[in-house]
Image 1 (spheres, protein in one colour):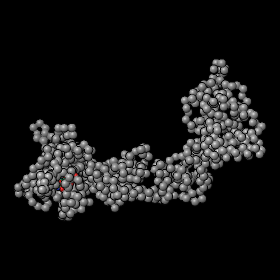
Image 2 (spheres, protein in one colour; image 1 turned 135 degrees about the vertical axis):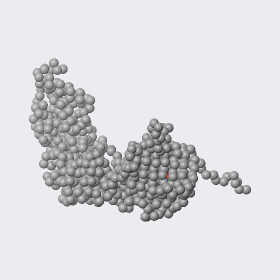
Image 3 (cartoon, rainbow, N blue to C red; image 1 turned 120 degrees about the horizontal axis):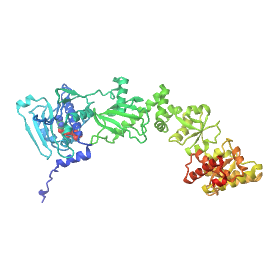
Image 4 (cartoon, rainbow, N blue to C red; image 1 turned 180 degrees about the horizontal axis):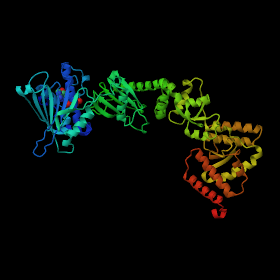
Length: 629
Ligand SMILES: Nc1ncnc2c1ncn2[C@@H]1O[C@H](COP(=O)(O)OP(=O)(O)OP(=O)(O)O)[C@@H](O)[C@H]1O
């Protein structure tokens, strides 16, 4: 026997619970009630015009709430549209069914793209500011006017109005709200004139129908809040008006304004190029309007990641909002739009390179990181802009073009650390480039494909310091003694001392910590003590060990202070009797070499620096050894 007692029952909806869910978890706050009303009014006008293209272009009239004062009675908030209106059946079905919408195409034949609403929850947002919602409406499709009253407790009433009242009512709907003044979210001022005017302007000033707000002090002269969306109609706008709009948006005059048109998703707008680099980690806040109505000022996924040099403002009909109506749904349409905007920005940069190279140079000066990020992956763009990109070289910062005018070979280090170590000893006739900044190495390595006749070579500390020659055999005794004596001074900081000859002559000391350079130092040392054929044998054995990898020739990998035997100061130190002066001078050379190599000073290095400076000052003012120690 079938069990008839198990016939399906409809879900019950606790309206207060739903409103609580909306206000706390979906909407950003009660102020969105006005956005939802604007949207319903605008959609109702669109629906009426879809039925009857000769219908009026549409007008939304908002009369803010006036609180009672003294003996004067107050008046409720009213929102009027001259849209399609609602019949009794439509009101009963659409207004009181949570999740029911006439705009998804499941209830009538109209195209979804014409409407902003779709979820069937918008009207409920009015319960965040009022306990009852009254809708009086006269349908353009005929029949008596109706009055629907919904209560926050989850009940509603509906009645048809008599013929005289119907005849006196214009086609369209009026929503009436009495402010709710109890509870944490409620404040009559949300429906008052100041707030209403501000909200209507924030959300609806670019809507394509008149939006008017009544000022209670001049009720017969409602204020029209619409503003021309200059950002959306770039070709019909003067450039000056567009830049002035951008200045208003950014708080500073934009560097340029780039027109955005993505017909596939009905998206139009402007990307304003920022006149200064955005703070690191700043979000890409785009402002997005949906059919002229503000969706959000903080959309962060409309632009490609690299496009942090613009602030975008667009109006769209083809991108879909999430239920909160404050974000965009991550779908193919959004990805398509993002790619199209990226292509537009690339084209703008390429045009700048072709038509206004000086302006491009200025732009790169401001946004070099953004440009390098694109150039690192994009050959077309890279070949257009690469010459103007700034690079750091051992002869100063310059553009790639300036550097190439001095040399056809670009020699670069892969890290900043290596660059700093090499820059002080490099031959000025053949400067090196610091490839250690973000994207620089990728861009430098692609230069031969981008510019004809350019060669690129990576250099390492080991290659550059290969010209560290051992002292002549005649000086061996003096330099070995100097090495031993100075190494004892630096034992406390675990640094050994080697003496070599290198350029420039006035550079007295170099700090070396690179293992491959340390190996070479060892090799030279062996070569200098083993003359003739033995030096070749030792060299061969050494390079064999070096090739053997870790643990091979790395018997001694302590950091090294490499003193320059070409420097007069170092030769003088080798003959110095005064132990205190010797000690302090070596210590200072050590710290100086650390600083020149941009190495951090550890606590023990700083202690050494303090003591050495104090003593050298003492010595120079005539204190003797005893007074100092
Ligand atoms: N001013 C109005 N004139 C005519 N019909 C209206 C009006 N306001 C609401 N409606 C009808 O009531 C339905 C429900 O409205 P509601 O605001 O709850 O949802 P929606 O606008 O469809 O979707 P969303 O939740 O995305 O705003 C609408 O689909 C529409 O058919």
